[in-house]
Length: 605
Ligand code: GCB
Image (tube, rainbow, N blue to C red; front, side, top):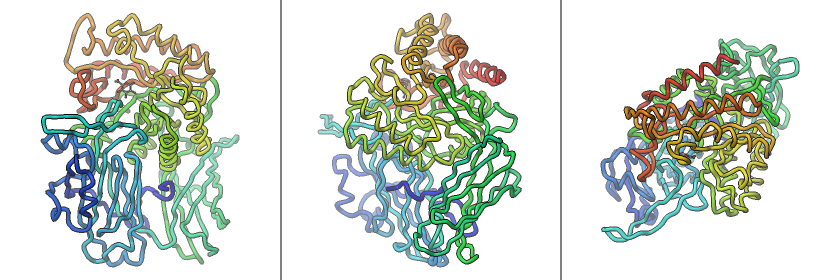
């Protein structure tokens, strides 16, 4: 299972990190013969000896890089390959290859040897490759990536065969509303560790009754032998002052560190210094000799929730948020630091304090940004439009949550887990299914509340009973009563109340919005115009203000932060246009309105 190890690759006195990002060779399989490369063992030699190759950047989706629709709409496998050197000095270490994410399924070979296979398009995986490397010589890495989604993958999809002008065609169907971008989406790293090394660092920072910080830490090594290892943990504040230390050599390498009078981690605009992070240095020693050092950041904050509110550091949270996507021109879902920085600057500009990682785990780098900027994250697993419940689907769903929690548990920005988006929870089998997904999530992490973004009517839904916080998606005056701005405010109020009355839990609105073509103006407001988006928002704000005064409503999340690409349908003009920003991150009129509201809300705290 890939829920062990996978520490984010960081250099230290004992670790080297090298990026394999850049230009790779790339080949697309014939959709009708997806396994020809495997049968012919393309990984045994250079790809160009078996098939036509082109250049492909990593990280990036491959879909929008090439002009032919066969690349954009490709269904099935593609191959990536590049060469790299490793120095002789690495021979005395362990060497690992780590992928931030490959969508959806990946196989990786080093010099023709299969080293790892991984499923789930938005989560990291790695393999130790020491024994397959040529030191001080050239090496070859080959990656097979398969974008096919089935009824048991997370998210789900369906493959059908259909007649076309060219004969039978294989078609990928999916109901979720974002483009099924594929490829090596996040960075690829080589890194080294010592022979015995720090495999896991689990941090559980708490705020004590006396308002001190107490960090419960646990370190896992890759060696279970009886050797007398010692772990030393040193905490540094933002200015690099050593503020606390602790050592442990017990069997489980767990201990506690007390930080007196700590700077707490606060969300943006809830405190003059939001996103305060400490760093912790973990030293592994044997007989006073340092064997491994790993450093990571963490924040100290408390989370509490009850039947009407959620508190951070004992103050009630009101979420000023967004639903988002990892999406941009050309690179699709590929990690891009320029885009990431711009997006966080825009979140700050507009006064947001939260977003949901709709509808899948976002990059680890984005989670680090959220920690630093004080942006609270509702961390969503990749389950969208869940239906056709089966045992296999349940196993995969749980496994995706296991991988997500394993990856993100140390981030102070993560304040809630979302176990699904718009699951079909009116189906009777949804009851047992979500009882189990929720139980499993809480077992893995009892320190954070769980939610799911529900669109089913509160009377029919079977899942909300298992959640701590109820999130609902609703498109009043858009999908319902299109254009009727007089059918928003009371509808939102009533639906939020219905959820609260039925379950006695805090409620937030996780999606509302209207498609808007920038530059389209129509008075009186008409769907798709900038006027309509602004006025539809204002009608929601009215409902939110009323609901806030009723004491159980804890947040508003606009759909969407920015315009994004979807599959081709007649309801989408070049993609989903519900962004407050365009796809190139320029504000629509509603962005200015939202900014005014978010800053006003923030000043009330
Ligand atoms: C939803 C979905 C989201 C869509 C949105 C829309 O309810 O959760 O993925 O993009 O509606 O715009 O239709």
